[in-house]
Length: 222
Image 1 (cartoon, rainbow, N blue to C red):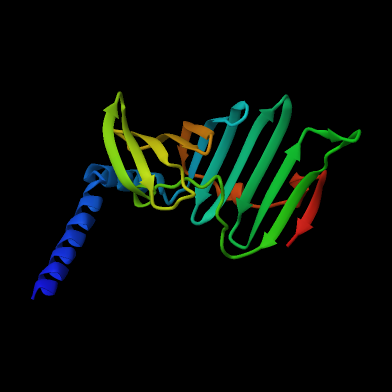
Image 2: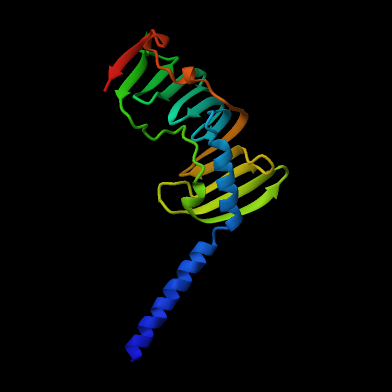
């Protein structure tokens, strides 16, 4: 009988502990994220231009990126300067293949480093660093919300996966529910990504792949 009471008490404590963990995510956070996800997942397509600042051993600023998505297709490009050298990257997926392009304004042993273009036949898009995650609330155990000017400021802590940033702060327009900014820090690396322009309605031509657009690149097919 005593053992039964102990088991029942353990079960009750487990349930209470679970309820407490769930309560750590402010319900308003989930509501805001779902509204943002709905607005940003426009069937006509979405194009976002962003400025990015990163800090590692050195501070890297002046990074600009453009991300376009429509009906499962995507294209993203980024331009930045590191130690005075220009770096350009591009990734795309047109539904039947994905490609990635890299250009670095650099010379090695007196010779320019060649551009590279990697092409892979696939019907499924791979995960990308350019992907914008509108389900952050599902990846953290704790989240709070406050109003900061015209934005909701959502702070996420205690990630479910160890590899995710220990803290992430997301800003969302409180009137239009547009995604505005994301800040994250992990293992001494911090990044701030700020949306400077949002456009709804993207032409299908944006996602068309043409190797002729990369005339100086070494082509690698997988």
